Image (cartoon, rainbow, N blue to C red; front, side, top):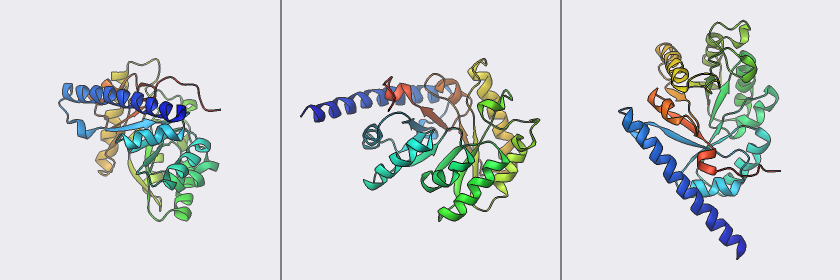
Length: 246
């Protein structure tokens, strides 16, 4: 009985938080003159149990984000076994040796940031999927490649933005859907997201299908939406501060 009561309390907490986040998204869209339906909420369930993910699905959230394959793969398998309708977003930095695993369950990979990673995902998707793998090119706005991302005019050729975009477009089994960024800590979020919007527009001129702009998290979803984000990645505001899984 205590377990059931705990589950119901957690579901109620998530429902309250979800209502608050959706209200923030709606208000930000209204301020920007946009329709709230233009913005997809991705619930970032990293470090949270599969039971939280299931609660969110039951509450109507079908886009879930993870940033580590060792946690994402079993969680995706658990929800798949229950036929939960989920679109999995891989949003963290991805090592090439994890490409095969991620290609099996991810619906959208947000963090393609090198020619080599694009090639590894392409090989994995060719062998382990029956449909193309949608990907975003992660953009480093400040050129700090250690934090992930491809940069305009990067000194490292395989991390140069145009080269990474080309590698995705020329691949057999990947489909370019747009761009993603994490705002640099030292930058004003609106300036960062405006910069991303300009880069996204440049990419879209050459590749009209690249319509996704993944930007904004719990602390900065409003400026991201004001700058045109189509997908926001929300963790703490939705799931709260809880001890990480051990």
